[in-house]
Amino acid sequence: MDEVLLISSMAMLVVLAAFFSIVMSRLKFPPLVGFLVAGILIANFLKMEEDAMDVVETFSKLGLIMLMFSIGMEIDVRKLRNQGKFALIVALVQLPLMVAGGVLAGLLLGYNMLQSICLGAIISGSSTAVVLAVLKAQGSLDKEHIETLILVVIMEDIGQVIMLSMLTPMLSGSEMSGDALIMLILQIAVFMIACFTLGLFLVPRIIDWFYKRSNDELISLLCIGSAFALAWAATKMGLDIAIGAFLMGVIVGTSRPRKAVEHFVDPLKSLFMAMFFISVGMEVSLNDLAGNVGLILIIFAVFAVCKFAFVYLGYWVGNGDSRVGFIASISLCAMGEFAFIIAKQALDAGVYTQSLYSSVIGAAMVSMIVLPIIGKYSERSYDKITTHMPKPIVSIIDALNRIRDGIYSALSEISSMAKKSFTRGLASIYFLIFLVIIIEAIFYLIYDPMSWWMSNNLGLSERICRALMVGLNFVILFYPLKRIMDSVRLILHILSMGKKKQNQNMDSEDIELAETLNPMILAGIVDILIIILTPNKLDTVDHLIVGTILIALMVLYQVWKTKTGRKGSSLPSFDEDETA
Image (cartoon, rainbow, N blue to C red; front, side):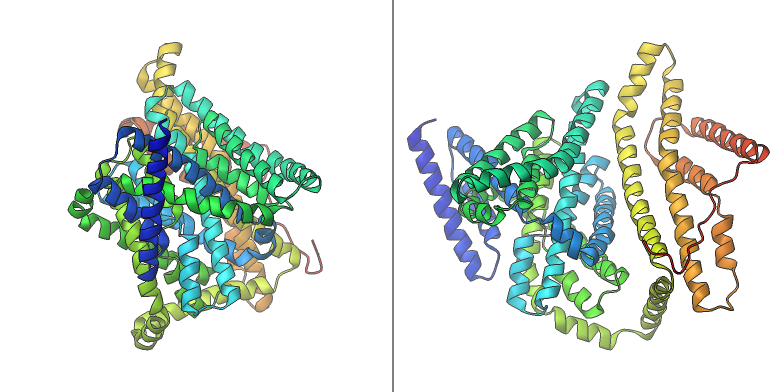
């Protein structure tokens, strides 16, 4: 690489990034918008040589690694475990709903399933830097509530890393054979499990050992080198470099020299992060922005409405303060850094067109520009809405609040062991639903290649092979769905116990309902519905035949259980004096 080209490109990029970020800061906009504007202007008005574009791409990769490493270091696993219970509730409620909202919006806009899933992943997170800057400027929330909100954003980052990992095989699936795709999924699973178990247990101890025998500068170099090493390892396992850098950041964040490394990394992050966002902006065409203003506003509106509604719902479910929930919901209406990372990966994989990519980036920029404006009026908006809200809506909200308060009141009456069982039941339902989604995503990817492989190697007709794949899907889905229904039954039983203790004269209809629910039958019905709704090439007649066979097998199993005297799992009886 020509050193003159390298120096001149670096000079131009850094000067333009600094100039536009300063301009945007003076206009009360996030500096990140300045980096994007610099990239857009470079791409549309300055003609760069091909070698110069290679320089930008190299700097972009370095910037992505440093950015993700820094985001990972911000995540203190111990703090999340000790202080993040309410933030976890908000994140767990709103994150999957944001993804679902994005997927639904994408399908309604006419995009295919994979493009819609990418859109859901893109709009699911918020920008830590922008949100924190706006909250500090407003002064509408105290330090405790701001910390809670930042924990919510951090958990969104974790969720988007998981989504980015899941998207990798989906983005590659169309170009891979069935065997290679299955191997890629297994490699990713092994890599992620190793990082979150062995990595978090062993690597921080190694870093601490070296820290005792070195200084801040040397240990920082070791950690940065490790970030590049894990980023390289991630690419070898079929993941994006962002995943490896992020995971090493999380690992370093649990070690003793975390603060020293952050201090050392900050200047490097600022420099190379600017390079990354300039490269993102350079992929945007002004003609595409001008020609897709309507789509940009629609994507922004979907993001803003969903984010406000679902974050507020999370605060409501967590029994948080209504006023704080309203302000917090508005304060999170700025798309996060992962929006640009996921969008760029979708563009590079050919899933997003240049027009759609530009529209997503435009919507993200609009969200960052608009947030300081709408955030300024969040308190006044809350006062006006609550004052002038129509009485029918007030009545509905009061009824919903009574239901929520009744649940919390019932939980306050039960034993500590029952409360822990209730919490474990909810957690089990949440993560099992997540597992069901992963299973269906895998079957969606391998359905065609595995059907073709079975047809060619087993000598069966393609129709039978597809029916067998659907049957296999049913069998694998059944166990997690059965566990979900068991947990739902347990939760209803625990709530009924609490209500009964509140009112000793209450009848036992709720308890009878929990006892009469048959988890196996419910799991089978939901299983069949999921398989029918999941896209596959079986026609209606084949669906009816497969469904009838599966129902017949379930009935035969129930008859066998009845004849052999086998009973389903009984509901536990929690003693008031029991302690965990």
